[in-house]
Amino acid sequence: MANDRALEQHIAVFGESGSGKTVLLSSFYGAAQESSNKKRSGFHVLAEDPGQGTQLRKSFLGMKNSGALPAANHFRSTAYSFLVQPIVDPGVKPAKSSGVDHLRLVWHDYPGEWFEQDVSGPEEAKRKVETFRALLSSDVALLLVDAQRLLDNSGEEERYLKSLLTSFTNGLLLIKADLLEDDEPLARFPRIWTLALSKSDLLPDMDVSAFADLLIEKAGDDISELRTVLGGLVAESEALSVGEDFVLLSSAKFTPGEIQVNERVGVDLLLPIAAVLPFERKLKWAEKLKNRGKVAAELMGGVGVLAGALGGVGALAALIGAKGKGKLAGALLLGLGLFGSKLEEAAKAGGDKLKAVHADAVAKHDSIRATLTEFAIELEKAEADGILLRSPR
Image 1 (cartoon, rainbow, N blue to C red):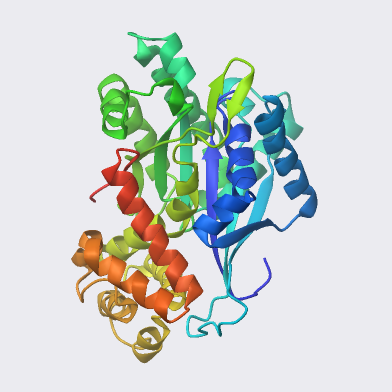
Image 2: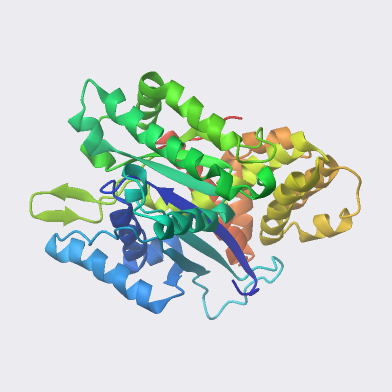
């Protein structure tokens, strides 16, 4: 992507065919174009490829006005790049302290068919590996658990869950040698693997804690096996979170002949999850890794960019030569004004303190800082509402 003062975050979405990936993407983009949602959120979401934007909007309107589901993208992996631009009052001079003008979300969609069946030949096998390589820049990966499949296997949910997790784990093992050059583990890799209940409207009585409990009870060993396999791909596997974060997602409420697109669950959390969740987790991991090579540098690099977006550039520049990643990370936190001087406090930040930082950003017309702190507030609210469960680690 062009160097255009954007804070860029990547998210990868995995799920079997029919698990709701295409509907989720259409709902995310289409709902963001509704005037009421733009007014509420305070930002525009723009597809950098106008053709993709038109198709996603068309799919959303088909659901909204005709109750028609979007066509599935069989065996196709597409990256969608969205710009998130704060809506600025033309009569107000915006703050320019952050060094960032807007956010960029790059959404990677992994073909569901590669979960369920073998590739047809060498060419498709090569494309499968290349597709997975393209996802390695992502900070967060979502693995979709289909609520309809859970209902179909009611009382025996482990049959579906074990099949889902085993298929994905085995698929990773088959391409491991192709992903690792000279058997060297990867420094750049999705380090947060979140389990998401898609079509959660089908299970209205299940909150996120109940969803997490179901997965751990019925398929805890399979989650552990997936964690082991992913850990074998990535350098410094302690800086890896697999099956520790959970979220409920519903693209709309589906009734016979009607799709109520305004009744969404969790879809509006995807931007906050992509933008804020990696930040708080990387701070903790970077402190644990101290000076241990390129992984710590990779983690701190991402933190530095977000610190700049939140107003911590001065603190970062002042201590860029400091010895020890822990000191640098502590300085970043001070510069952010969100947490204290200790990394352990990152996990405890929020509440009134976070709201005060957000109010300060709004008052100073620092739109990027206001947007990011609003994202952090939304994650807190989602946890309180039983939609999101974040790892305490």
